Amino acid sequence: MSFKSGIAKFTGKTSYWLLHNVFKGGTSFPGKIAMKFDPDVLNSLAKGYETIIVTGTNGKTMTTALIVEALRKKYGDVLTNPSGSNMQQGIVTAFLAHKHKNVKRKIAVLEVDEANVKMVSKLLHPKAFVLTNIFRDQMDRYGEIYTTYEKIVNGIKLAPDAKIIANGDANIFSSVKLPNPKTYFGFKLATDAQNQDLKAPVNTDGVLCPQCDHILHYHERIYANLGDFFCPNCGYHRPNLTYTVNEIIKQTPNSSEFKMGNKKYSINIGGTYNIYNALAAYAVAREFGLSDQEVAEAFAENKRIFGRQELIKYKNKEIDLILVKNPVGLDEVLHMLNTEKDNYSLVTLLNANHADGIDTSWIWDADFEGLNKDKVKKMIVGGQRWHDMGFRLEVAGFEPGTMIVNPDDDSLIEEITKLPTKKIYILSTYTAMLALRKKMAEKKIIKAGM
Image 1: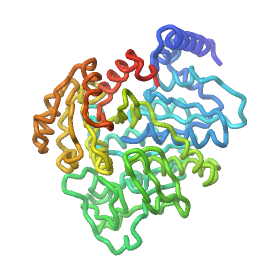
Image 2: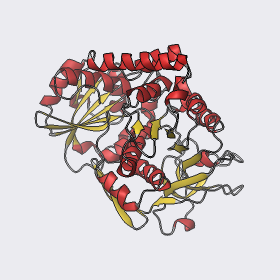
Image 3: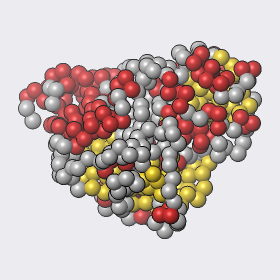
């Protein structure tokens, strides 16, 4: 360790201790301070670790959490960044915060922002990359899906020996030739899939063949551009899958039961997209030596994740706080809500800060029209851009009289307690979610932080 990196570690760890023991927070600032003294401090912090980088548009936080839960079953201590602070300074903070234990295999599982994969890979020398999906998201930051993938590929190219564990149902992940060893996962639900010839809806992103630009067809489509794709023009098709979901047994907004191979698995969270996340975690766990039984036990114990379908109980209300950030993710959450058997109230919080994406037009691409309106007994529309969301819901067919317009977090929490249903779903963008959680922590409804 160089003198410079030693100083960086010391100042970073000291600032972390002060922030968390005196000021009760700080998921990236200690990393920022350490990097001021040594921009490459991550290189020395990560020495000796087998690092797994999890990246993609949706599902990074849940996939990372499930991988960590599984690997801890076999290897005990696993370093991770559970707050979802996934840029370089947040990852440095995760290493600074970790209390090292004596283990035979030092493993780090890190959620990494797509635009940060290159700079992190350069310093970490990863053992594996886990690729979840790529959808249109925050156009002001990432651009189109092809530029997003290019950012990821530029990072992968720095680690040609690292294994790629990718969603084979996403046609973009097999579109670039890379020297890395590869393993693919995906869905195989239909027994007669090879006899089908399907197309995605006309407004679906990412359905042009990466080889010839012809519109892709599907033997089986799961959602958005994910599925058993093939090009009728040039023959480009889904790669062979090593790990598969073969049956979805039961889904509710708070649980999923499904089969991978011949074994049943369950997770305490709803949504087909979360089954994909579980499949990704399963693939990693198997590649790192876990048995089916060890994975099943880990999944059964999985906890709700900070701000990602987080269950909060308050004054006889069951509140599901769900992060939404792009049209595909929001669409899948709305589909998940249609599995709810009981009546519920719906709260939408829309912000447009840099971390959310400043363009809110994406809310028009989600199928609010398809939401079962009979189940929604009352609505609260809040956040900085409440007027945009309120108008979107009116266009979708919700009566303005069923909506409470309430952009203030203090009165929002009070209004939640007055809602007529026990079950409440809050769909929130990132900064609105953080602001609401902060208010809830101040009122002792939840604990501060994670």
